[in-house]
Length: 422
Image 1: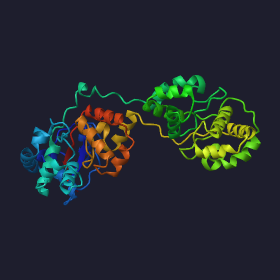
Image 2 (image 1 turned 90 degrees about the horizontal axis):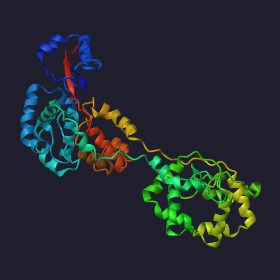
Image 3 (image 1 turned 135 degrees about the horizontal axis):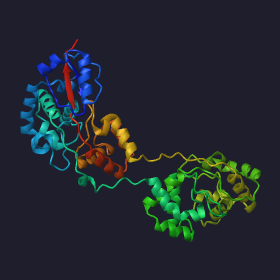
Image 4 (image 1 turned 135 degrees about the vertical axis):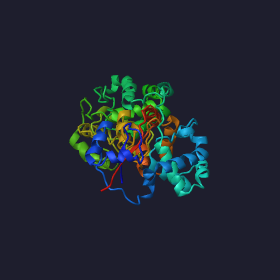
């Protein structure tokens, strides 16, 4: 016998004799699946001995009934009657995919998942009982989606690029709308790594860099604002400053050899701690070098580098770097909620309705449980290389909004249509 999964709303039927008689040809299976709104998978002969984690998918109605008896006595106190949890942080298990339930309870038994309450509850379940409990919960109607008001307090995730643009609006008068300056003596803000931009703003805030206006601006910006601004500028198209230079660029190129170790060839840095100098505004560059030389800017490495340079040599370096083409730093644009959902759906099914018995359905799951699970993957309390990689870059806002999205989705039961083998 073979199983054909369908997660689109057909009611479960297990080992119905009249149904097996009716569905005697693959074309009949295709017609049934069409009525259910999906295309039938190619039937494969049922294995006499399926892998352990697939055994719940082959459970009989008698197995399901026995699983109900065990679950009512052992699991219902926490997971609720018929697998619908009313306990904060405890997941719904009704309609969950059978092989996933089986595998994860085995993980609790072995200690691979760290939860003392679950370990104690399932410690004495033998494998046969575990198969039946998993089959029982998979056979149930899944939970209804969370009401809109239950997730309304979760704000839509902030677009950090848009937030950075808004925060940078006050800077446009001097630095240009996209960070490319047309004002002599004012730096370009494009081409910097995010970490360098944040460090520079913190230096103005602390007084390590002395500039009254910049200190006022830095003090009024929150840490989050500064990070968003750094991202916004890092994503802008890099262009050289739109101001003239007075030095000798050819002479500056020769002198720049001593700077390349830290600031990169042609002024394009590969170290986030060191700024790129390509395309930088020449008068600003010269003023910064003089500040390092005098000690007005505190940096021992730069003070040593600038100490042997006269004004003419500084002007030449400024002219050389101003003429170089800046490059965009390596930066990853954060994903939107829709883009995150698209990624999650690849494994968990459309809107969280998995069609793989080994992959959990997350549609209509409790919102706080989804948040807790994602945080556990991020913190390595749950060990799964795919989920760890997927969740690593999620912000707290991303976690909250993803959990709210899937909690609102309609859950669809997982259905097996049994057909005769060849």
